[in-house]
Image (tube, rainbow, N blue to C red; front, side, top):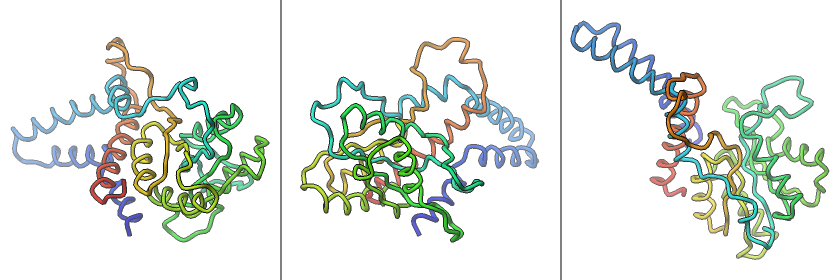
Length: 258
């Protein structure tokens, strides 16, 4: 039930959805003063949502910024836990993995493994489908990519049932507790905007974790320049991700999932 409700909530928290409602209201209202205010505020909000500088700055403050590799602990983590949600699975031909935003999660995991910062890689995530059609799990697809990158099979752990961040934590814990001592240190690898919620979930289930930001969406924040006047559809995409993630984080806190 929580899974389906989260998908419905995503629709109603989209900035584009509310802009459409706003425009319809402004168009059909009969009150001249209200109509004028609605259209004025509509264009102000459009400017804010499409402003590259404002969107980048807001997301930058929410993201957990990347950790310099030299600041990682000297002893390697037993497992790097990679959260999925970075591929397209409704795409043919179905003979390869199609990456979406966030591929750095896997690429950086490979880098951390090669550099000796993690000993094994756990991929957690099933197939998200509300209509019952069966696809190969995303964890399995990414595990195949790891094998292409010549990561030994014995160093790849697959969890392919989780549908959300809470289940990522719960199901990963079940696997890890069977393989490693209770206080083993793990590294959670996910997108910078999502790491705050992910760490809360993994800590809630009792795992000893450190976060590693991958899939960063922002540039470093600088003083306003010509960027302040640049409008871009990417900006509204950043706002949509940020709003959705902040709501998700709040809901997880309220429900005590994190």
